[in-house]
Length: 314
Image (cartoon, rainbow, N blue to C red; front, side, top):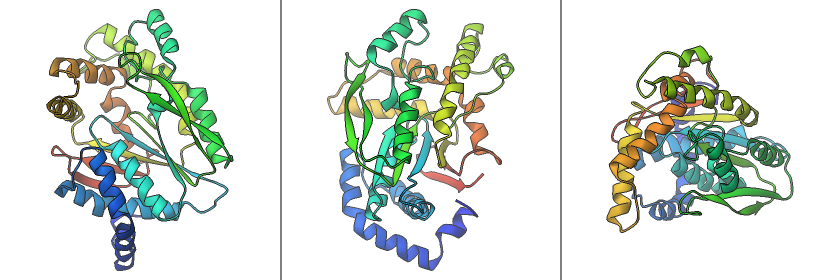
């Protein structure tokens, strides 16, 4: 992803190619959005023109050799649309003839039994999600097999409803050789920081206990670098204010409850979201990836109403 984003994606020839790609993919994407409870609202139309189609075209260009699949990472906090983007990219890349699979960092969670043991050893790991709750070796092995073009790869899958919502692994999905794999998750690509940076109190890290937990998660993050090293591209979905994730999660839960499904109350959502902020504080671990010289290839700003803000290459 070299050069300026607008220059790469807005020429008349490129726009025509994007229009043709949309014509072949529109029905499948509409069905996918409907399955996720989304409609073709104005902000989605903007995302289609400024992000989905240009990114799919550039990713196709970046993929050059069938014997060397491309691994694309997407980082995004709760409510930023990372899972939706991954699913739409899969459809658009497949429409261009690329065999594409999607994975979430959630698919690599440790088993229920292993996480139960971890909680018994350290009750601070009361929820799945922070660094230390995943099988890093399994993630590395899976991505290495995909990059090697293996004829048969077992893609781990995770059932979040198992054990009354605690979740556990379910049957893997079998895939053959692929051209592109998309790995999405809330801290994909983040780097460990100096432990001294976690000693100063800040919002959501006010107490010594909070900061000690953050240091443990920071130390655990070092093991994940062996996963990130296998990424060929990294995209950051960055809210203009990381606190918006709580509002977006509340809106999602309220929508679920209105549909007759189970959902968390506002207090439970606050505890849940702030737990993640304490484990890897967004200002310390995600904001640096949006700055010049970072490992990110593309940063997509998400503004308050979930529309796209700036899209740029740091």
